[in-house]
Amino acid sequence: MPTTHGRRARACAALLLAAGLSMATAAPAMADAAPPALPVAASGCVGPSPVAYGDRVPWPTARMVPYQAWPLSRGKGVLVAVLDSGVSGDATGLAGAVTAGQDVVAGGPARSDCLGRGTALASIVAGRPTAGSGIVGMAPDATVLPIRIIGSRRDVTPEAIAAGIDAAVDAGAGVILLGTGHVTGTAQLQAAVARAAGQNVLVVAPVNDQAAGLAGQAPPAWYPAAYPQVLAVGGVDADGRATEVTGAASGLDVLAAAVDAVVPGPSGSGHYSVGGSAIAAAYVAGAAVLLRGYRPDLTADQVRERIVVTAERPPHAVAGTVDPYAAVATVEPGEALRKVRAAAVPVSVEAAPAADQAVARARLVCVTIAVVTFLVAATLWIRRSLRRRTT
Image (tube, rainbow, N blue to C red):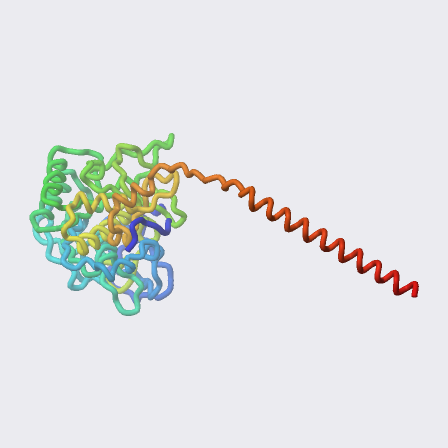
């Protein structure tokens, strides 16, 4: 098994943007067309997509190559909480994978999704393979716990995020995925994150993916991503460029694919295109689920460290891009990192040994004898030739 990391790299299409009308009834899904962006429903719910992606493999899946780790782990036995708009248990690839969950804003279960956001995230983490489709999650044997933290006005508060984290911890989640964040960090939210860490639960959250300011300054940090116990995730595009402008306050730890992900709609057989730092966080959460399934003995801190240390980090990159297989299979990531960063040791080359004088003299004698012999033989041959001509 490898002791270091290696491979691949790829940026910005805003998560859950693009205007569109909700569809009240399902339309036949067209194959091989480009899926539309997941619409933002100002009112009502997101309907089915008219486009089915078919058996093609989306670029982010090809970039993350989770199937390399599947011989070791598919996430079986790991409960991953998805904190966003709820998760549709009827979505393609999620049948039998979603528990009832909890709505911490309005009460009740969260096994439905009006906005399609949580369903998209859950599909990336734990979507099951389906016949005739190239869409599959990172850890297809994991179980999804939906926690709804988005209110009826499509807003999210630090209090709701904190309540969602607490609910996920109480339900036994091993990994918590946040689909959003807030620019305000509160004592309640910080306490919820600290409690999760104390209960050996890994929290994965996106950095702020809003546009940079006029002078190129980074947008305000998002919480809980900015807390040190949280695995904070940004995105990369197909060319390996970061999709967000981040500052030190963002807490950025690692990057993942954040452009042109393809996910099922909350209903119907069609697919939508999504992007943004929350999508990148979903891929990283999937990697964490794979690792927790393979190494249940590791603490949340150790899982976080392995994901960061084994990430690919080209020169001048703001952070490494997650490598799921390396995170799962690397024998000793800390030792591998030390080897990569070890200082160069001067190498001394021994001088060639001095030539043996006796051997040198013997060679000279041999060469001299050979030359003399040749000259004598040549002289005799010439004399004989001259005698034959005169007779």
